[in-house]
Image (cartoon, rainbow, N blue to C red; front, side, top):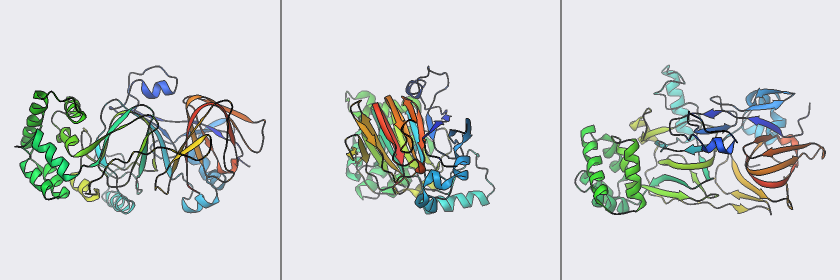
Length: 399
């Protein structure tokens, strides 16, 4: 059997407390829900694989890839990533802040996964750090205004902010920042006794409430405190860069970089992993020693990415990841997108309008997708084309 056409996807929803009751639902054309929808997963991750409509029935995407690995992935990708997609494609809706977190590098993930397996810790255990042996570089692209935290501030900037908002409780940490010692700063901050952490939070909140400042740092400290009043992560905007993305802008997050998504709806594309080391703003498991092991202690600035035109209808977000490539296709009825004949497994998600996908092998075989719909385009489908009026995001693999 030869798979020569795109295949419809049906994707699982992850319901986490920080999700939205309306954002993903609206994208999917659904009514608001009582339970929050946090993430829509498109891919073959064991925790939540997509279903594919094939041979007149829905089957799990991992099963289809195992049956037809070369046709789905293409020979080059199949050789490097046997019988599995190397990426996980998501829609993420944050109505409340996500945890402060970092993702491990590949060797760290492999070591941590093997260690927890040998200990007998179940994969679904709440104290489990490593769900798989893979690293998790990722790209977040805004569909609405999107706010988050990413990377350590310059030590002198963080020290100045702490002298302004918490000069007494954080005097030791300010001294480490003045020595450009980010590791010692963060280590001592996280190791504070709970009673001292609460004193720091109280000092910061007292100063911010007395202030008439309307800057984002002050406002977000107050917002975080409404959700996690006893969590030292409340003060994280003082030492982690605060960023805002407009729709269409993106950020790339490498392994080891401290970050948190705070608010907004976005497209997320990452290596196929669910490994997270948390440091705060969460009721979930926090493992500070393991987080310290994977963190990169270097100052950084959020480098906002804008898509680079690849054709009249497609623009790509240039990131250094080996496992994935993200692009956006935007067109009106007068235009046409023509894919290269050589490509690997691609997932298309329509976020606006209505589009028609035609396979190279049969021009009369047309699949229509509208806002909220997604399809898998196998490697064997060749040079498909898209027409119509709308926008879709495309996840693929560099080949």
